[in-house]
Image 1: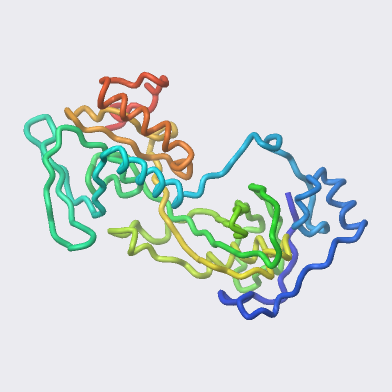
Image 2: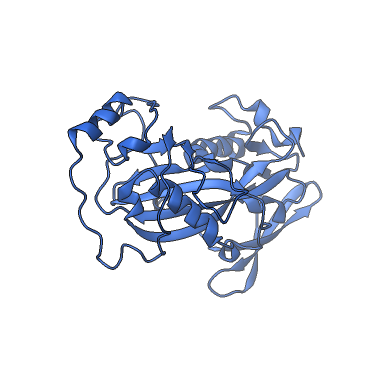
Length: 311
């Protein structure tokens, strides 16, 4: 937990790129003493001591890791191609059926814009928040979430932080309805950047494609201000990206995701992972492969995730 400090002014999206930032001075013994009292690890020294209230570790060093979504998905795709898979980039427009079984998948090619159809005996719908665009009966809804990427003014140590920040009363006087507490997640990456994400919203409905996702600059600035209120290295860093995505949720269900048979021959569902999709992707892929090739899940008991319970 931390108590955010008021920011004298809001940084522009290009701030930090001008070279005006200077190296931070080493912390005083008194400042380091405050971090030590809060049981902070010695190398987690990029938080402002006066902002810290408490710290709890999730695990010991070496027991956790993070996965970069883009690097993970593109690397897995490359490995699949090396094993003989053919990857086509495009947007699926529909699934065609013959009786009670799948027959083909229609899609629009990303490169050419042309429409095509592929015959199929097995189809796995793993379209995240866009699942209902090809499987309307699926109880999958979408929540928008914003994030930013910051290059800190000085390198930061490798920690992922789930914060709880008490915002000062004058944090944003123009938005009196804003909550007085924020919980941005902060992920330090090995390329000397920091990814930070904020709360979700349902202000803008899910667009037709990911290219049409609308980014709310104010919500991104909120995240920048929140993490900057507890860390000078982030406050004075360069903002590299302001972005948004949609998370898939399982509506009216006891959690998610939904993985397995849909009740239609050859049609499987793997969606509704919320923000845990990257973490659970390898396990989901293995289970789906077992459904397709073995007829049932072998690696885990996932009866509670059966799509047929909700379709």
